[in-house]
Length: 402
Image (cartoon, helix red, strand yellow):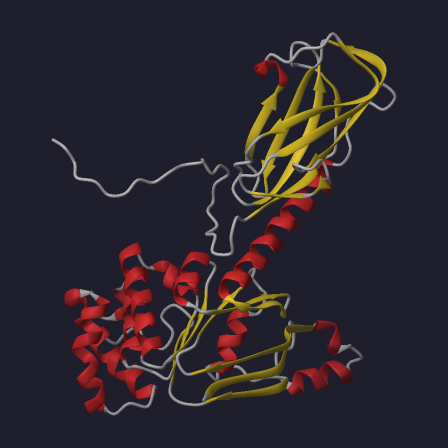
């Protein structure tokens, strides 16, 4: 049975006048155009979830992720569309939301349980499990205004998850907790799913989303960019942010060098000699370095620089390190640089070719950045924040000899 229905939902905010009809009417009467301040947080967003399903919502800041949770929890109302949530809903959206700072942790547990519709006897039955999961010790009887952000989150998640809701909504707040607590949270989310609960998780931690969610939603500027299995959605999100970074790098760098003296460019060839823009991890690639020199460049040093999408240099290849030497480059031609096994971590890279003098000091020509996309070897690849993937082998377990 579908417990969560989110059909063709639009949500509009007003940056200046909020949702007040009176203030919007006043703006109209004074000759202002209230529509110029309209901001569409969601644009035609749809998804449906049945018992035991989980959805990870990812995207850049300001894309509308938290707005979805606010609508599902009843905090915000939609402008257009249809939303239905069946069953009890527990939400952990903002740090400390629903806690009264002057009340103790114990008192806030009962207060939150009452807000969620539980009777005192039911809350009492859950109380020991909540305290054990929160792991805040004697602070359970201290006012929550004295809690650290981590203690806030532990108690908030313990209340939200231990009462066994039909629908659990969790925002980025879990990132405040330490690694041990996060692991326990994701284990609890798995248990809730197995018990039939629906979990909707908003997070920038892609590994956590992948571990806890089956389905995914990539949302940007209020619109769905990708929906489906979580692995495919994370891949689409990674490709999007890497594409933006590379395009920005290429646009800012532009075309350099001294026109009329020497110009250079590059392209990528696969194992069959076909021109490509992407290569699978571990496959051979040839970088064809093309030059057009009006004047000869004596004893050149050729340099290929590879930058990762997030900025750092991934690698630099210099001809002089491989003892490649020619007396000069003149006229129009090319040099092929072959890499037998491309070991760059899957993702997008910007590659640049430089023709430098013999001392590797002065650049005679600098090409534009060209984009190279390194594909994952298989669908279940886990993205890592690195640039190099060695060709390694793992042995079977063996007894250790003293």
